[in-house]
Length: 123
Image (cartoon, rainbow, N blue to C red; front, side):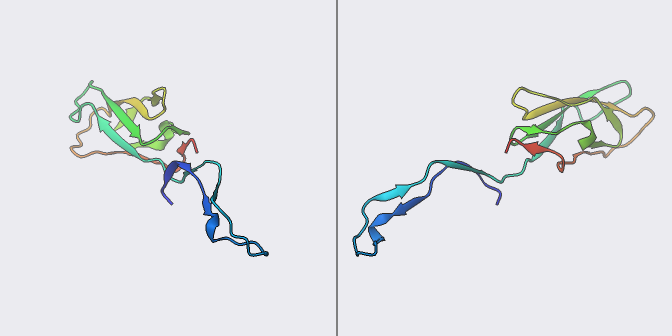
């Protein structure tokens, strides 16, 4: 669980193996390479400016630990403003959106949350 390992093999030491006639094996047998990816995507959210006023916007950057698909505006919870649809970099690891605060609001403590349940990595 929670592993990302692109290079793996299974090796059998044949020196301890005997056939029905009692002949001892020599050397080893090795499988082809296989990869394992059971790691789930994680995200970090940063804002270019954390003190917004009327008519001011800021860039929200959401950085994932690996390339993701299935991420869109419906996965973002932002209670004191509106976000533009997020756009991804070429690698699909960094997504940016513009946050515009809600008019006539005074809220000193806010958070932006990402629901990762619909976000998938390439595996």
